[in-house]
Image 1 (spheres, helix red, strand yellow):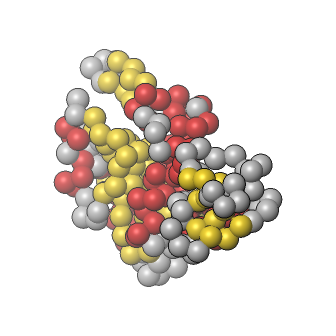
Image 2: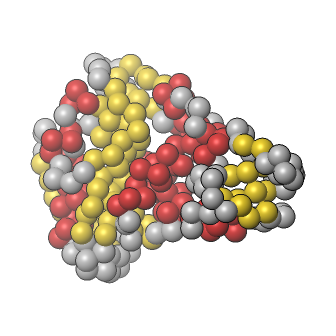
Length: 230
């Protein structure tokens, strides 16, 4: 288990710092956690180097907190709604923890969220990973000088923008959205980030619709938590 550091009433940031350095931590009896080992020597709860909060979320089935809505936004489409996931505190906490664990090996400098549900994921993930966060938005939504990328849809085109000075050239960026379907928007986001000098190390979503094979459109590693095949 490694060296155990017995602590008092530390705040979450202090505990996170210790855990991020790979140490094992024993917290006082007033600290609430889920399944942990008990140190028989002093009766303290022992954390064996887990990321903060892992013990609270590892058994949560995230799919139970995502509802499917038929015929939305148009007939024939089954919509996977993450609103219920966002509304459930423990499930949302677990989502951010698990996604952070998946993305940590990529060592991003910045997370880029795609408008608009991508913002809901990228912002707390950036906080968990200690990175910056930038927004990829529809035209006319960002102040200052922007750079845009226009891409083809099944019928017509669409455009996304980023502020010109949002990314330092060479920064390692992970692109984040809620769902990966055909991959068109994610591919456009990657192209825009490369255009402004970023190194895109991965793309990440909570939900992937695998039957649409969106990941085949992307030239970077793709990380998703949940997969639906219909």
